[in-house]
Amino acid sequence: MPDSELHAPVLDWYAAHQRDLPWRRPEASPWSVLVSELMLQQTPVARVLPVYEAWLERWPSPAALAGEPTGEAVRAWGRLGYPRRALRLHAAAVAITERHDGDVPDDLAALLALPGVGEYTAAAVASFAFGQRHAVLDTNVRRVLGRAVTGVELPGTSLTRAEREVAVELLPDHDATAATWAVAVMELGALVCTAAHPACDACPVREQCAWVAAGRPAYDGPPRRGQAWAGTDRQCRGRLMAVLRDTDGSVHRSALDAVWSDEAQRLRCLAALVEDGLAVRTSDHTYALP
Image (cartoon, rainbow, N blue to C red; front, side, top):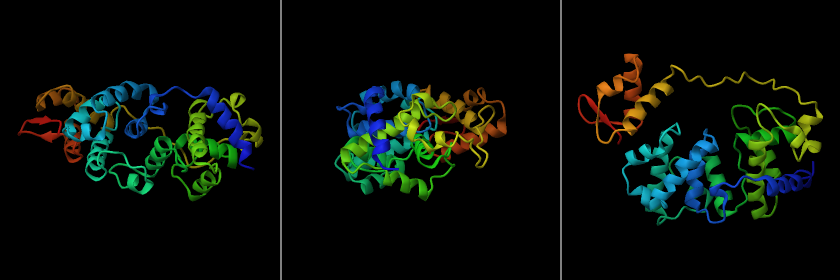
């Protein structure tokens, strides 16, 4: 289909319905965009907002964060989950300070070279912070393009070459328009073309959507398993991290024992936290944030 069949309605919809988020405002710095992208991975906007605001108030620049111990980044991460993202953000801040004089680089290759920054994050920062023309492919974008262009209800677990080619072909030629298009498609997937309950009647590209035209066929790919939580190592690690975050200095192992009864699982998860750099052993019986 011609690009314009999707561009105009999506861009017009975004202009009217976009959320007012701090990392999208004109005054947002490239650093704030990078912080938001790492925090938003697998985490809802509502949970990110208060942590994001407190983070940037404390560390308004990469150099400010780079000057702090990694444990402070982990503590400030709070309950966002996947706290290794805090370590990656700290490592990126150190690299930006040391390699780029404290300024987030605007070059895609330089962004990709930062610790913890992958293909998606690099493209998102280059697009949203610097107005460049890149295919930005998160789950929301993949779902919108999969439905609208190829008629598939849900994307597969891994990004394919075909998906990337479709995304690149659909990029508007003008850099600034392409950057707006990237965030507009993402917003459409977050608010309208959702995974479980798409609001097709409110979708600006309903008339052009291949999935709607095909009768909204159900997903028929490999089984999509939901993430378990109760009793998992993830839950155990979260409990242990909460104790470490809420305590200044070292924590006696008895305090960690109290939050998880399965000793073998608790010891395994505690060892994994130390191995991941999220905790340090300060004596035979005490632990602390790094």
